[in-house]
Length: 430
Ligand SMILES: *Cc1c(COP(=O)(O)O)cnc(C)c1O
Image (cartoon, rainbow, N blue to C red; front, side):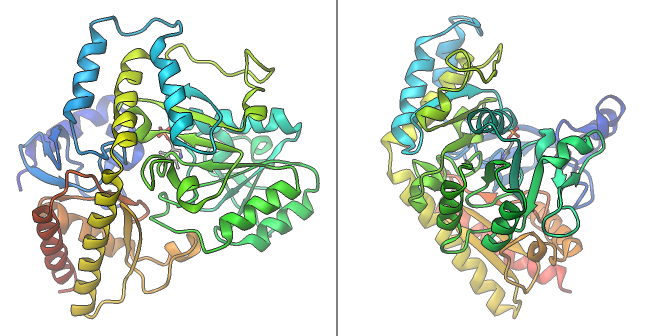
């Protein structure tokens, strides 16, 4: 594999972009080596600047659920472009988009479009605070909700103390209002609430975590949180930026049969364009301006080109339930193949999997929270990552990410991936 053009570009990039990338994980820091610069993609494949071809298992961190450059989405964007790129005024498409989201996601009665997942989560907690008149929020260690200040918070010492900033630039005062609990631990949530009686506005989590690797909720966890939130007048927020329109047409809330108060969306919702959204119970969403007093706005929100891509993507998913059957089958085939190889090689690593999301953790422990995930051998993951890349399989460049499958993967791709996986596992253990 030749990567001289990518190396050259990365060198240049570091002169004019912090770290050479516009989002940190892309720099390959946690796996080492030089990031590959992508030139184009189609279906199940991405191609880099050196014309290497890879089978895709990231899919832009989710949005390319139908594979790259889906012809229907492409045609919708082409057609929208002819009518100019932005108006900053209401459009028919925004109404259709909102109606479609409401019809697909059972827990959403009203929805507001924004431009990223980060914007969606920031707005959701503001609305929750405005609705309840309370300040504090609870999040979970290892869950990622974008780069808003309130979420870049690490657990403080001791179960009931406030959080501490997890990045320079986040103030202690902001950190004071964010409490963190271990994922899958209902009791510690109850302890936080008892220690902060009447002060918690919202509880936010990834109903299936993608951002510490793929981690599933234990049976009863999501239900237990629902009850705790109801009992304590806390707005229950599912961050479905990854799981929305992926784990089911209506996302994780539909799949698990839970009704959160608010849901945040991103990634798939834009079909590859920068789009996010938040929505949920009418009485909460009616707090959003101009209907209510909670301010939130966006010059490019509901952008016509982005809406054309997103609406076409969601319409397709809505009208083709076989997409989800196929994704389930692809996920099952891949993961059972991985498990076979692990067994054959006498390796006891953990695979977490649901639908079209999975992670192979280089640890023999079960992974149900961030502490478990951190027992992974990340150096070994780095070797595995590069072994796979060399064999033409493009994985997420970090142990702490989920992989995302698309409908473009065929049985022949699956075979290729499984073979590369087995060879890579052998290679890194030599
Ligand atoms: C990606 C992600 C975000 C942030 O979305 P951006 O569009 O990158 O701002 C928020 N929450 C979750 C669960 C995510 O996976």
